[in-house]
Image (cartoon, rainbow over all chains, first blue to last red; front, side, top):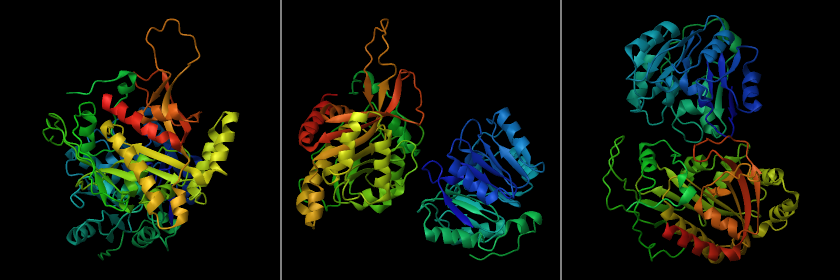
Length: 245
Length: 318
């Protein structure tokens, strides 16, 4: 199910949180409403961890991760890194990487099997992504934008991309990612999809400006209506080949 | 020729509100604009017109490339009626309007954009990004009193005012006198050239007077016959103002106004209340002795013509 919420009057939920199938990171400093919205959906299933990265609250845009690992930028402090390693499940590898493009959340979009990255990412970083996150990496652009992490959000079941993505691009990306994709908007017409929402295989959180139409598109493409968390967390089955555009 | 800085007021750091490359260039030239403005189009008759134009041309400019900054940036600002497309731009500008209170900001922005007869949005001509640089409008408190955003706004104002004697005034303006009160909302990017301000305020008050004649229903016409205006904003107040500082040689102003027109409004106001803010301000060197404070003030409608004149003088001489 998709939930609408706000972080301190801002509808950019994907900036202040990071949701995966194994854990959820939330920025500190927001009101308790923000944190409890995540807790009420996720508390029994996965840990919800409050953290900052490099002293900032924009954690969703600075880090990239999936159920296998979490990558944080070079300016993450040692305490933050230790806190993350302590709070996250043991099978999640937390790695700090030296990459000059430090807003990893803007440069990398990934699910548990595939990652799309910024075209100018270091070769070394790409190798680390493959090792730590256990994914296949593709350097791509989305509707001409190199910040792939900002303009698309995808899980193992579906994906939402920038509204101006052409049909050919949608086809190509859908084949690469092996999930159904839809071009759409979030938060009442905003094109920065990943900033406005955060999603995993059974739930999504969107900004409160998101219209009912946008929400129904999200629920249908990410297949959230019939999703049950335990079925997915217990047995991570390979995603079915299902490309419709 | 560059604008002469006028005292402490101009020491404020220039920080662009948006992140487009253009906004960054404009931030760099904030103190070096030269202006030639033309009078507003003589042909504009009624508030229903598409837009009013103010051409701002810099004769010395060279167009700057994306990141390289060689000289002065040329910008043509234009005044537009509010449109639903401006939602995101206006919402960004008004993000901290009520400090950090969680309220129906989207609803408030919707009301501003629906009121096309009174209200102006400043954008660049032919800008693909549709970036909003400034918003100015006046909303009748009585007309919108049933909307959730206005009840939350009233609640916020009544709760934060610490001085007991002023709350009576505020309560009456927000309560029984609400039909005659306009909430003056004016917000812009920090580095918007001040030469635009007299025109912006003239546009607003002219539209208000046209609306009292042109609106289709009697009720709407009356809703623009404002007797009072309320302004909610932020200023810098000298910390420890009462502490005796015998050693201080430089005279620090007790209050620094982020927007120059607010100094005039404050002088003309019937009453004003300062209230503490929860959000942290960014501490800069010049402002280390100052605390960002909220202010609510009420201005009589009769004083507006004097305000417009004083604003024109202030901007023209700086």
